[in-house]
Length: 146
Image 1 (spheres, rainbow, N blue to C red):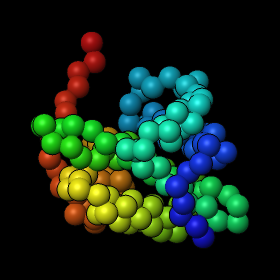
Image 2: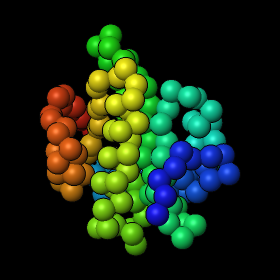
Image 3: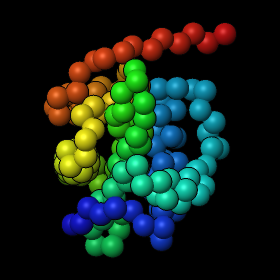
Image 4: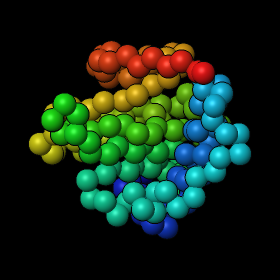
């Protein structure tokens, strides 16, 4: 098992995982296009040194990733976990936990002291995972479809 910073060679694999993540979120948001496909997203992301993109690799297979980007919230710099995904067949093996732990350790080596995550309100599995790491409700977004 290796958790490593993603390189350009493996970026397209994480594009495929992000596509799966977005399709999974359709169960919480039916406005997501079922034919949506991510292409060349992470190839661009990894060139920004403020971003953190870690992948969990085992037996030369990328089984999951975590992506954090540096943002300004309330005039304070912080990281936003913009994606965490573990492929379905590898879930419930502690991979997401290891990815979060490693990402938080990377952040602790910076001068950033805040990490945010946006989670679909009905995604109790993700909410409980983040709460185990000390994340608390901070803001609530509401939506009305018209």
